[in-house]
Figure 1 (cartoon, helix red, strand yellow):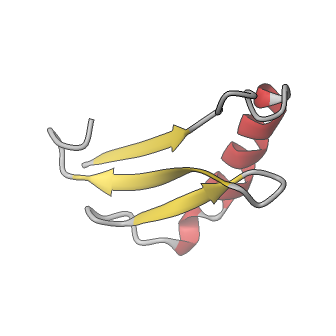
Figure 2 (cartoon, rainbow, N blue to C red):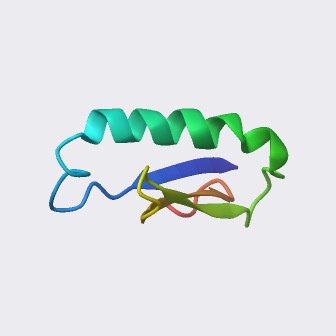
Amino acid sequence: MKFLLEVDLGETALDGDAAREVGRILRYWGGNLHHCALEPGASQELYDSEYRAVGRWSVVESGGGS
């Protein structure tokens, strides 16, 4: 299995504060992973601090989804 995390910084690089926003996303969503079944097909949208969808994490079979 592979765990994939994708965050779209967009044209504004998350309003010029990409490092802070990505750090927040990693802390918040990483801290909630224990609530999720990490198995192929699992996924969830990721949101920035203004609740805009900016990415997704997902679990895929090894060899796929890259």
